[in-house]
Image 1 (cartoon, helix red, strand yellow):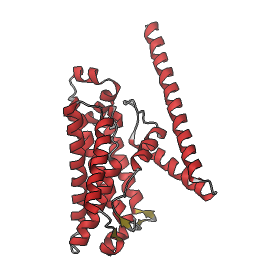
Image 2 (cartoon, rainbow, N blue to C red):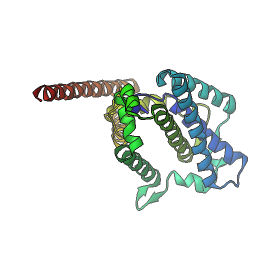
Image 3 (cartoon, one colour):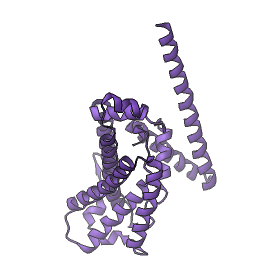
Image 4 (cartoon, rainbow, N blue to C red):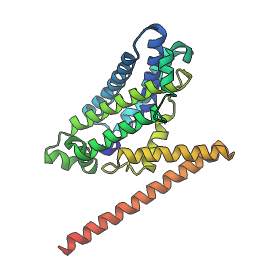
Length: 270
């Protein structure tokens, strides 16, 4: 979505909804197959993404404004649904809970799933025509439309796929942690945007990769863990992360200006 010059601020709320829905399904249907819950979480996330995408493309309002609104709408709906209820690990099948700590060849299963998703999305961005179209849309939406790219369709599908992946994340979150409730995922959207910026994804669109965002997330997680280990106060942890984001923005801006200057000189020489 950021690749196409947008942003989804409702991802934390979508994750919270799908995580709680996962716990709710297991609590009300103890014998439900695990694969059905995975499919339900992905479909629910895709529906949330489709709503965001439809509002953004039809209302022609910046994605930041739309998703800021749906952030509160989805979170409000979750608060109404969940209330003070918490779905705990004891409400789910043991096999589902084991997914959060399972390993394959010594590697955590959740890490392998994340790597698979990152590889697939990165290949899509690089080699699929619709993936490259998102870069064109992010670089210049008007020019992309003139060129014949179905801008609204591409942006809508970006939101749907994003929602589906967040839905998958919500199911895995429910597997990994002991409880899910009304506050699950709250504030996570800011961490996600920070990871993208640190990972080289330009908020102005047209630049960035899935693996870059993943590296940014890994860097921020490692840094936060290290600061916690040495006893740095959480306030200063946030300050360090904020400084890192500012540095990443400045570096991106400087490199972008240098690229434009190089292209200008090249055009002048010709």
